Image (cartoon, helix red, strand yellow):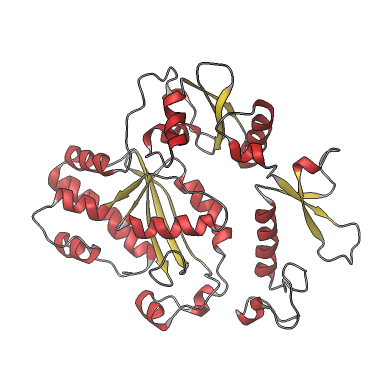
Length: 365
């Protein structure tokens, strides 16, 4: 259907992407027609799940009380989304929840979208109903886990295959490509063949007419991510200008995620690319430094790399993209061990902490 896409479904505490929260994520990544990854998890929303939602989805408060937080599962989700088209039934719903959840972590989600509701309308205009239940009835699909995330993902996974058998691969693929938001061909003025970039971890550099880089970015899949700059719908005028100004692309391989973070940080600081303003403005990368006093609270302090003129402290833990991410990692660790974030000085207050009320703290407070 598409070269690389991620089928996704979310279960949530309600229908408002700003005020409601995700309680379950399921996804299947497909590349060149072959499934390469399948992942699902419950998510602790940090609030109560209503009886209505529990009845609809089968997910209650007890099930999510020990589940990981949105911050904990975000890295895996972003890894699966890297360079892929996000495909979902009524994709605006899932995209809205993902975008708002990531914005709360100061992450701006940029991804191309394909809605299978719209795809169904394009392929089967003679039918009136294009909801998932209607499609399942129309094609004789069955699910024992309707309104659970992976059950719905599986239904959406099976439907395009049936459509391809009925209508042909070419017709389904053409309709999907036409509906993908912002799809465009790689511009003819680009001197570098993006297909020569390795689809592996590293840092990529966009150049214009001079040796000064326009943009420096990182990805676990460099080729897919670099191509997305030219094939996605520009969110701002700056994005459009960057795509139009780029003439060639260079890259540096790294060993993994930490390597991409460090190398991107170093190259942006050294080369000052015109469009990479976020890293130019702030020294965001940091580590956690252990306090010398064993009785100090908190024991670990975030330290930005720009503060460390004498190298990394010993011992140091991390690397984290921001001090906020480092503090969140400490909070997640406290949650996983049932520790009180209040006694650890991770949150203010006296008496019983909020985590205790949510049954995430064993009650030392």
